[in-house]
Image 1 (cartoon, chains in turn purple, green):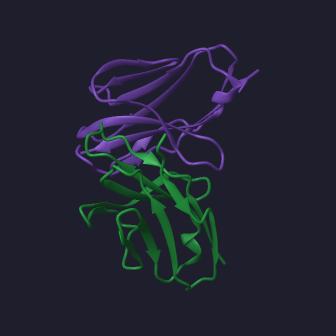
Image 2: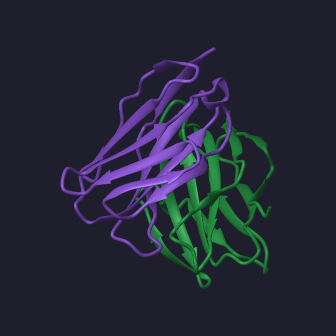
Length: 112
Length: 114
């Protein structure tokens, strides 16, 4: 079974710190990787995607991908209380316009 | 900024009744998806739709479910005879043909089956 695993948390960090969120996936055929933010009662909001091994930076967010280890992470620098949400890792397995397989999410709490 | 819209935001129905959930994808997008999220659980894929036909579906998407694009803007999910376990948030997502496979989600419809 194709799985995407995340630590459910909560991950608690002080305001201004770096939050590090991790995700592992089981299918080596996975092609592309996405991070969504989901506030309670709301829909997933796309914040980052990554396809190639290495780092990808966008503002305060950095996505890291290691296909050999089947591991993708999201770093949030200078964390703000407004970053408090559940972060969902999603994987496109098989490429193309395929469905996304989601992890269960990591709840992040940024303490003021 | 263009966004996916969904109606209604909340639907309450009796077990055994039919419901239709509606979505208006982003206007230049060609790929459409339905996902659901039972309270406290993962987002789960239901079905994808392209060029007026289903391109992929999950085990959840059984004969009780159907999708349709009745006109140039709407994309609907029908549940023929709702069960208690169909209670969930239903999200529509869309993707453009020229994208990096980024799917953009609508705000969701909360379906409550009594």
